[in-house]
Length: 101
Image (cartoon, rainbow, N blue to C red; front, side, top):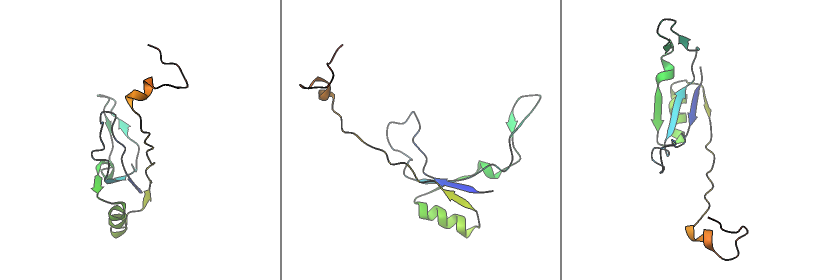
């Protein structure tokens, strides 16, 4: 059972970068989830998949995993490309496409 060390992406309801600077260590599920035939709930006997550990840096997460003998895989985050835009650019002279309503 391996663990995954990654930086979580921001949720669709977030506009800022809150809680996206920390690294997360999650165990991958060892067994598949089972569906209860009576109620339709899903369950699993694997308790390790419920644990999510947060760390300040990637090195702290790696050190924790090696210290406890947990095999891990590190996923590097994708770099976000920021383009500077201004509302006034919609109306500037010499646009490639004409502005319409």
